[in-house]
Image (cartoon, rainbow, N blue to C red):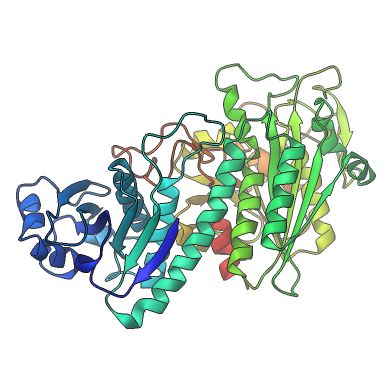
Length: 503
């Protein structure tokens, strides 16, 4: 999509549709909405007074200019109560308006920057662009039939104050970069697992790196064996598709790196501990952590952030076969710890264990791992509500909180209680890979901590990687307009926010 800025008045802009915002219960006589209302001889006020539109969050109404303005249509978009305004509400409302415009067949849209009188205008413009692009995302790679409505071609953000143009331009550029990273992650997760094999994921990472100008090395089975990554290999050995260990590096600084580690199980059957058939197709999303890391690298490279980053992904499939690992097996991980296998469906932590051990080779300032790791986290925090995170460093945890707040991607800190360590004790090895039912989401986190030696935070994104419903006005917070049905790309925006503020 072509995104540009116009230093003009919204009522003077030519487009198939212009978008104006409406707060719930607030007088519209001033601002861009008031100017459009005046140009339309009070048509917006008439809608409000008749309560045909109330300004509820993501509510939309359509007016036709009938030649009194260059734009053919006006789409009024609700922002909710003015005291509740936030960057995420701006993101949502922009998506709602853009989707309505596409439903109407509009090819060109223009909008004032929603919430600009209450928020930093650059951040608001970024949210407008993110919301528009993410709301209009759709997965069509494997479809042969044409869409009913074509994509919107262009968005123009309109700002009448010339002194604010530079700030809006900065927000547009950032929003485009972040959205491109989220698109990348969504595309990777939405692709079918017969096409998104470990080799294909590695190729996708390499193609992204070539495009973005960053370093990417794909290690093969022989290298993985040479690293004694036996925990990772135990998961991979059941599949006919060989594993690929993906290593990316972005050098925006000479400082020791920040390392992102993504779980890269391109399909998870559960292995010998086979999952039920219902919903197994969703296990295409078990590489959402890896996808978020790849997407974040793309966005960060586009933004040219002054940070040194390393990305690590231990990609493989978890399949049942005559060569698959078994419950009761004992394997020795890269750092020498022995692991008893209790459940082969607790495979993500096995691959992450060796990746986290390898991360120490870079002498990192901090490490973030992202994984669709446990159903327990979904039970704890809810589907499409929030991801849980653990941290062994309070300063690092504070930075995660700040990134969560800045990006609008909800992350809630969970505890690393000493009691969780007792859940993974065993008579047969140093630790076991599952504490069983009732062991809590923390037992998976303390398992991973056994393979760390640096400031570390683990993000369990199992409840956030997919949206099975898609956006609906009934649930604007759990199924918002900028999240379409399927892969969400969760984690990209928070990782980018984290890297932007990293010192």
